[in-house]
Image (cartoon, rainbow, N blue to C red; front, side):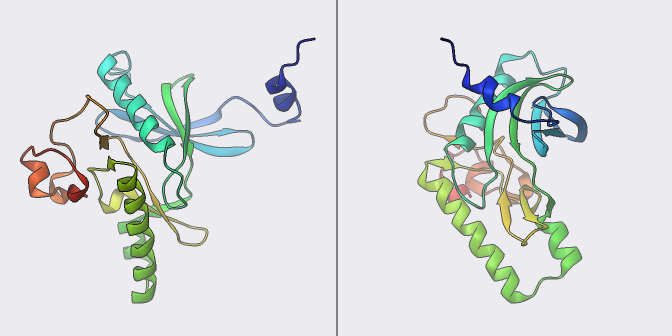
Length: 197
């Protein structure tokens, strides 16, 4: 007797769509499309490739690499990623938690947090960075725009591992990052390691 558990589970969601709906592009970067979409009654972040790069193997590998790096990390201050999926209108994309919040620089400007609050946020960030380093991962693009602060609880979420690296990958080994935030050794093409972060 065939027993398809996944059908049983998704059939139980009465009135909740199991496919992505309400897809809204929120940002385009140099290589990526970021979209917010709803599934199972909650919001998700989808990170895909721009149409002109979607069929290029190097960019597909970069997307897979990013997912593989994030999915190994389980930390309350690091964005969670779940899978690669093909979504209509986006194509191949990473499915991640939608973070309801603002970037660290926006938070500091708008909320004017106290010194105590800044120290609390910095401790969370340092804990998240220590976690990725323990997994042998270098973020390579730490900057206020890649650090979110949640609206609910004002907690740090480290995001955007698109330039991250680890020793067991052969792709994207050239210097990468945002020049204003790069370590000099990183900008000069030195081997990326945790000191860059």
